[in-house]
Length: 76
Image 1 (spheres, rainbow, N blue to C red):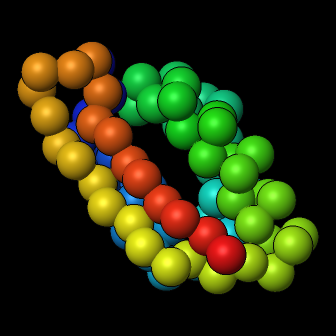
Image 2: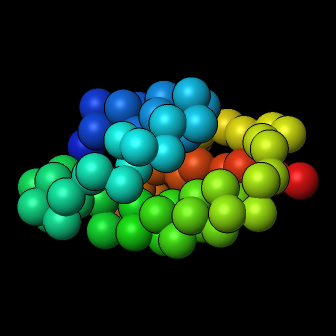
């Protein structure tokens, strides 16, 4: 199960548009935090940065019901 603390940390990075931190996040950190889903964020945020898009909305839903917290974001 993902760590809520680790998820919140990476969501805060997303809110700051801190692409540098995302680029420097290691595969060991992904595995240690149980954040395999974050790999999708890396692909998406790479495209967002390359295309010069900006975040219009986002939210983080922290849950114990699902096997992971859920982050949502809309970029235009």
